[in-house]
Image (cartoon, rainbow over all chains, first blue to last red; front, side):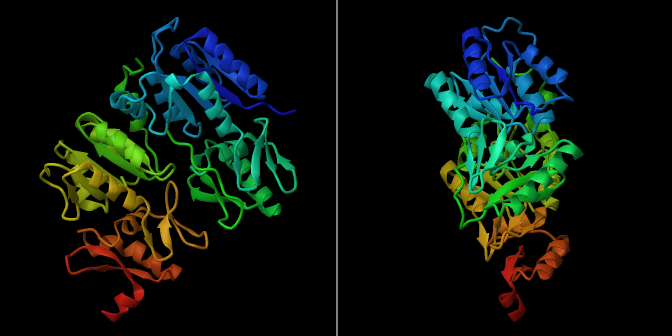
Length: 223
Length: 201
């Protein structure tokens, strides 16, 4: 049995939250949805030892949140400190304003930014681009497996998915168990003669590198 | 809005060993521009103000790869790091007291951003910056070490620092047969030179 990777969603609008949760469920992720920052912080705290989301989607403006005891900045700061390996997309109506961008990037320096005025469809499209990624001869399928395209063999560990989603960025893994899984993924790549190889940067930091002559990786997703 | 009431908890203050560009300004506008100029995955941009620059400097492990500043004075911890470590230092506008001799100063943001892009894309022989940290060779070998990253990015310039600070990186270059060595130039800066040129001196 496989556990579907979690996605944290903080969105104060109930209808939009429902739409995002449905989208992720359809893609076989397990959505952790919250309409307020305090609820999102509780979800992170309660799932601290059992799960670590592979993606977080954060609405910066929480004017409709039922509880305003915490802010989206608090959630971003927690993610930056405790879940550094989790990619984060932050969206806002005012994403063009440099002071908003500065506030977001001070809360989470690695956050990817998205313009809410482009609509929900644009956000979903961007998320899909991140989660259905092809890196060299690897592809994420259904959010739960990494497929080696030439052989169609599958690797199921969530840390492998995390590395592919993050490419070309370095991922810092949080535990010995996670780093063992990553090394096994590296051996799996080697045994399949994959165009992608695992690069260790020490201190539990790893990234994927695509051999130049082999399949080209997608450009890095950057706001 | 999403601003936190706990500025000491900001993610920008979290310690990290990745390559860091520390941008110290009054309002963060230049940090946003730097964020847009730096290729994805190359470095983390740490947007600081004078009041938290010392804490954020300390969170860049082992030290910031690059410091960019504008319209602020140097804080004590930042001044100390800039004077003792090989940190690429780019400054926009009026220059504060205490900047090291190797600092590069710019009148226009566009020129500064070009220099930032140039540092990220630096290539010295077979050596170039790997995404996130380290220096990558053409054969995929990863050489780790903040000193080497600084020397590669600064090339053909160098650092006005004592040569003995670079002994470890000099040994690493010799061991790896990279074809480059560390040498003091005629301006008094320590920089990378081709081993052939270095041997001829």
